Amino acid sequence: MLIILVSYKKNDMALITNILRQETGQFSARFAIGPARWDFWDLLWLHKGQLELTLGAGNERLNLQGPSGVLIPPGTDFKGRAIEGNASASIVHFEAQLDQNCVQLVPEVDCMHVQNLIQLSLDYCRRSEKMDRRIRLLVSILDCFSESSEQGQQSSTRLDRAWREAILRLDQMRSVADVATIYGQAESTFRAAHRKQFGSSAGRHLQQLRLSETERYLATTGFGIAEIARLVGYAHAETLSAVFKRSRGKTPGEFRRWCQRFA
Image (tube, rainbow, N blue to C red; front, side, top):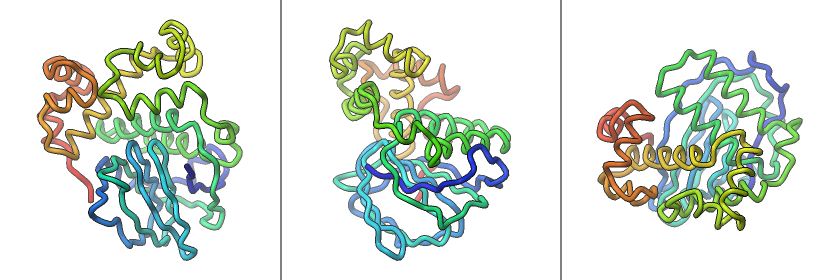
């Protein structure tokens, strides 16, 4: 799993001048992405599935498996398609004063951490947060990718891998105990490890994964709430609807009418 990144001065907010567009959507194996070339930066983050991309004049080929992403500089030719079925993703189009010649391939970063930050960024967009706050968060996301980031040099942890597997099998994850089984330890040990690494509750993290996947299904499919509940690991549609409304401030139906697919 590789990510195209840019080396830049860490925490230099002035480099990012504007966020143009930020949305979630779905790529299909039946229809190609591009060929295209944009005049702005694009952070394409793959939340779930597999995506094959061809980038630049050298036709650099990347096979991404979610969660992972690619930063596409302005003026870069790219094309591709999902591998087997559909792939859910989000995009951030932004204007920035970054050196396009510093693009490089780097090893896998802590993808779960980045995915959480991107989900928070999407939430900021939906809540119409002030642009300076959204830019600060985008800088934090890019800092995870910067060459100077020690985190970006480390391989993913055993805990990260357990959560990544849990996302792929979310319909089977009835509780934190099921994720702990993937981790290979008792539930109490898993909960303690999660809190130590992420500083948050494992149960809360699992709930947020369910809600994020619910948003994706509502935005990109015509599935009914009962089917979505099954896919994200809830036994009853009523339970999902109640949790979703409490967390997102909208019913699933209201959210579906509010959001739009991106092409």
